[in-house]
Length: 149
View 1 (cartoon, rainbow, N blue to C red):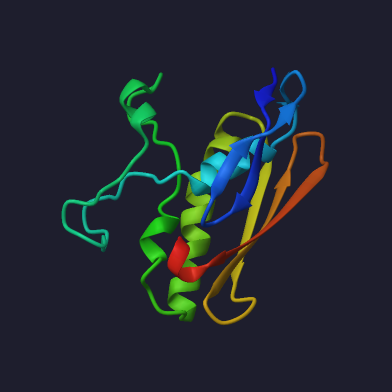
View 2: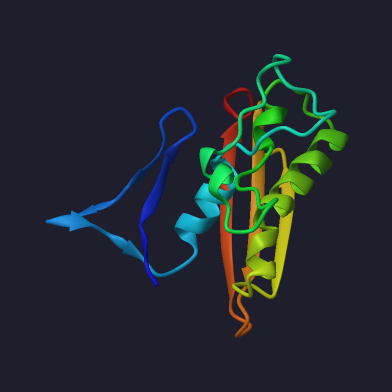
């Protein structure tokens, strides 16, 4: 089954669907799934340090999840106002792994590897390797302005 191809524009502008005249382009790979999983805001959990007490965010579709408790998106947005420290990089890695765990659970991937790094000041980098069940790895790299997460 094909998704509507979503392309990542920038952290300020977000992502958009790709036009392929006369309609929308399809995506038979993982690009759209990865972009939406990482850059849709997951709902904050109890104990998460949110920018404001009532700012819990979350994806509206979670209210209609096929399985009770299924959640979509990542909590990377919680790191936007945090300092660039090794402990925060570990959190970023964990949030990205958490957001992509469904790929393994649903049998789309046999392995997900995430590395969080600082490519330069005020930037968060994520290097992601998704191993498909056939053994073929697919690699992604994202860099975000820290304040834009």
